Length: 175
Image (cartoon, rainbow, N blue to C red; front, top):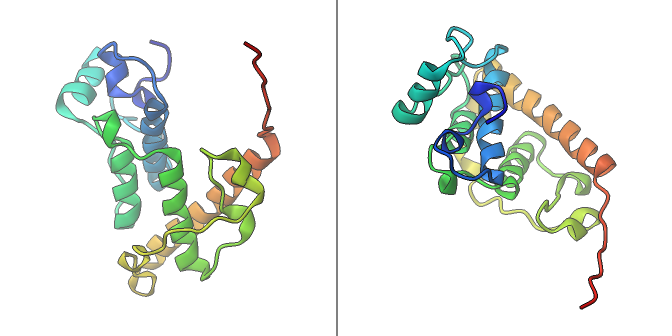
């Protein structure tokens, strides 16, 4: 196993194969770090004891006080000890798009991307916004609102970089 301990998914310590869900776990750790501005488990020694606490006892990094519940929920889903319960990239992007819809009232075409179907990058696809009402931006604290705006800006950067560096390829295999 290679990597920095806090970002390594628990299943990898159990000699299970690396999957895309392993990266989603790491993304969950990064989400927490965005709330605190500090590296996760900064007060722990990166050793076998920390690995055991993460794998066997479900230790996860702590969020900053005032972190919006929707943000905590997404990060916790990403950091689930069961890889099958972690959201995929499309589900994460849909959730981020829902938050953008709440903040801005509309989503521009360039931010609605289907990662699993790369051909949709240039085409606007529908977004499921049925569960948008569970985030009450009017009653959020200023700190929570700032987190959502920070997330929005980070998401836009992600989409911009994705579109810039993703180059679809076509491969024909003759049999």
